[in-house]
Length: 114
Image (cartoon, rainbow, N blue to C red):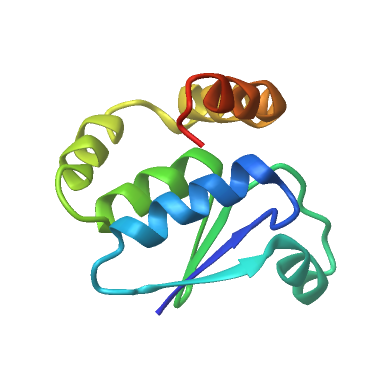
């Protein structure tokens, strides 16, 4: 099983969690609040998504690409394309989305997507 840690009190993060749940046909993801990860590791994590799969630990952009690779079609193909983007650049995009998630949530509501 793949442990996915996310900010459970964030509306946008919950939309993303539901997106993953709906496309995870083999039900391989288990979802946890990021605070549980912080408590286990005695290090506070904010505005991040973390994947733990055995000894593998991925954060932010790398975690998102990994998640996409495990979902039903067409997401594994999207992950292959995203894998060409260096993590440093991908993390900038991830940080932009994380910083503006309140605005993104408003846009989703305006356009009737959530």
